[in-house]
Image (cartoon, rainbow, N blue to C red; front, side, top):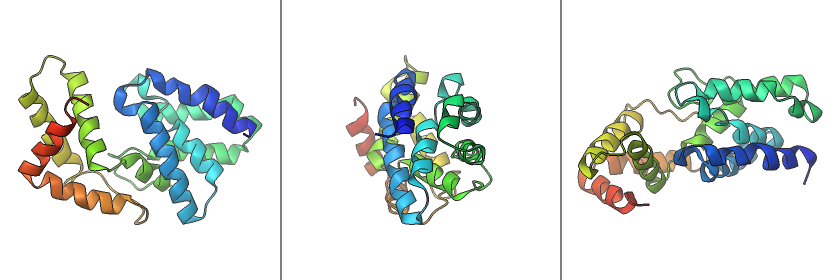
Length: 202
């Protein structure tokens, strides 16, 4: 394994153990894997795509609202990266990290920003519903099941339904197909409740 990857695997990814469950190790691994797949489709540098994905949520401990900004700053200030990347690449990667947020109203500034943004969506229906439940329960630990369902449903409608704020920037990979199916589930109350029940205690 190359030194840069050894560093990321040994010093960066383990920090996700301290993140909330929906932004933990499993999530960052999934974003890395999908970023590499999209980088291959788009024929761009996989080394950059991997590194961006590894850092994309590193600032989540400072709060969700500005985590993209904190993550970009962390990457810019990580002097270890300058052993393996030129300054222009570090700036490019930090901009991609900054631009990955789902609620961003502007397109990412580079193909790498679009890759990590789409890879971060992780639009498998079970994953989306489960992560929404996990986050809702962490914010409302005393709430009953019906309350959590209502919060999850509202979140899914606002983010993923037709007209929701989530955008896909690349019409490649598995995300467009997954989003289409997820929207069908959200539009069908009975189906949505079934996914909710299946994932509530996971």
